[in-house]
Every structure is written in C-alpha cells, then in structure tokens.
Length: 187
Length: 187
DNA sequence: CCTGAAATATGATTTGGATCATATGATGCC
DNA sequence: GGCATCATATGATCCAAATCATATTTCAGG
Image 1: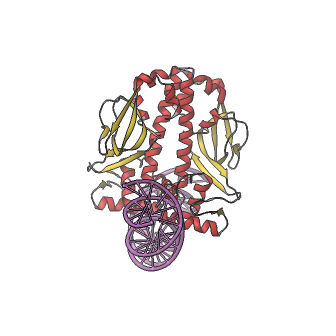
Image 2 (image 1 turned 60 degrees about the vertical axis):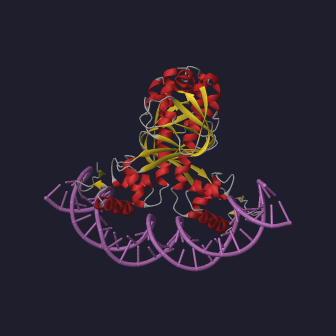
Image 3 (image 1 turned 90 degrees about the vertical axis):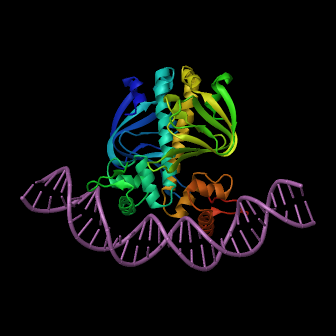
C-alpha cells in the first residue's frame, strides 16, 4: 500500500475482491475514489472509435489506479480485472479532505513526484532503440529486480532479445553473470 | 507554468537564464528547489558506471523538473541545458510550507495525478510494436496536436514510419486526411 | 519422487521499422 | 521575389529485433 494512504482514516477504506473479467468501475460511472491493488492485476482500458480496446495502464500488486478520479466526476475509462485479486477502494471525499493535513499532502506529493520521476526514466529507457543499450540502461536504472522475463517486459523487449543482450554485455565485460539467472553491473 | 505554482509566493520564484551546455544543477549538490522551463530545453542526465551519460528526462517549455528534489537533500542527477532558455527556480522550503495550504495541496495533487495518468498511457502506447497500431493508438489518445514530427517523436517512431502508418490508416479508412498535414479520427 | 509449468538460454528465419535518398509544398526572411 | 529551411511525403535498402523452435534447469504441487 502506497504510504500516504496510511494517513487516511480506516473507515474510508473499503476492501473488495473481484474475479477475472469483472469490472472494478466503468467509463462514465460516477467516481467514488481511487484503488490500490493488494493482489491480482487490473487493466485500465479505453474503447476506440471502432470498439477496439486500448489498454492505458496495467496495475499489479502495490500499485494504485484512478488517482485522478479524486478530482473528477466520472471515470474516464474501464477498469477490468485481468487476474482475480483483492483491492482496496479509497473514498474520494476522504482523500480530498485529507489534503487539509499537511503531512498527508507532503507524503502524497513525495510519492507522486517519485513516481513521475520513475515513469519519465522508464519512458526514456524504452525510447532507446538498440536492445543492448536499452538493457544496459535498464541495468543502470536497477530495473532487473526479479526475473529476466519481468525485466524484459518493463523494457518492452522480447525476453529472447533481452537474454541475448545480457549475454553480449557479459561477453563485453560490462555486466557480470555470476550464476544462471543473476546479473549485475560490473563495478 | 503548471498551475499549482501560482499559489507560491512570488518571492520564492527566482527567474534565471542559461546558455546551451550550462548546468542548472549538478548531481550531489544541495537541493534548493524545483524548476519550471519557460523556454528552451533541459536534459536530466545520470552518469553510468563507465562514465556514459544517460538521459533520464527531457523537459521543454511549460514542463517542470526535479519535483522530487523538494523531498531530498541532494540532486540525484545533472540538469544540462540542451537549448538555451529561461527557467524559474521554485524554492524548496516555500513549496514544502505551501502544503499547509489545502488549495495548493489539491492543485498539486490534481496536476500530479493527471501527469501520472498521461505518462502511463504514453508508456503503454510506446509499448505497441506495430507502427500502424501505435500510430492509431496515438491518434485515439489525441497525441497528434501540432506536427507529425512531434507526434512521431512522442511515439518513439521515425517520422517516415509515422507518415507511412498514417497513409495506411487513411487508405484503410480508419482516419481522415482532409488536407496535407492534417489527420483526424474517422468516426 | 514425479510431473508439468515457467524461467533460462540460444539458434534459425522473417519482417517491419530505421535509415538513406529524393522530391515537393509551405513558410519565413532579407 | 528569391532563397533557405522545415514539414510533408514516399521509395529502396538494410539490419536488428520479433518470432518460431528447441533444450536445459529450476521449482511448485500432487
């Protein structure tokens, strides 16, 4: 759970569980608040002119969604459960009034600023064309935390291309591969 | 200028101009505040293990940078002027104390939430592999506002690939091209 | 312990986007 | 008006990453 929301009164938090395919909210519905994913996965989707579904955002455990709904009347997209899980709804009015508490405001702002920074960096990294340089930039940014598969998807690269780039970086001595599946920067 | 900062006392705003190549701040320096770009361009850069320079973020007119510095002691990267311009430094202490004003806090949070949403969407769009679908998603997201060149760079596509994808979408009747250089969704 | 699934790893082939080239229409400026 | 510059536009070529294929290792669950 992102830290600022620890300062929200527990009465404003509503836990809920949903099965895959369920919608947490629909585009056009009145906003009641934002959500935090405990486990499972939620996709935010918008519908295109010809009915195509565009995924706007994929939220996994620990991530929040629809923060902007606190400041608007209606949801602007659908929230579809991609993988069954448990979520917490945080009441919009409670968040709005929590901004009267400077501690909450600062905690919120800190968290938001940090997230914006991370996203900008992610966008910059994804923009690197060469797989090898992209992977190296990802290593420098410390994006390889769990599996290479997750790392690859964060980089928007196929996992094969990622493995190959890692291999090349190891061969060139730019990163180390002490054991199967573990890589780290060569200092 | 992003709206929340209108609520900061003018005494906390320091205008400055810098030539290309100058540094607005350096990694490791004590933080004094965040910056808003009036005109020109600033790159945030981090130095890699072997001295390579990684661009973390490119800020243009109207964009702010180093928001997270308000919450930390030292800058975590260099800010290099890529194109000479005018900037405003917003004092860190003034921002921190402004959070005591709920109006500022809400304006800040609204702006941050909106930015996070836009960035998530941008990342999702850039992740679409096929140029045609990426361009179409960009059209749906209304990212083609000024020139096709800017649109292409927002999509992380070459402008040639973007023109070709636009042409194909026009041929397939998915978008309209009433006059040279103007495109819009076909409803 | 056995089995199936997922991660790791690498080879072969295909393809789509980058790059290079070129042309024309617009725009601004002296 | 003439010139330079930039956006628009499209064709040709090349290359790198996606995709497909396959094998081994690891690991969770029955």
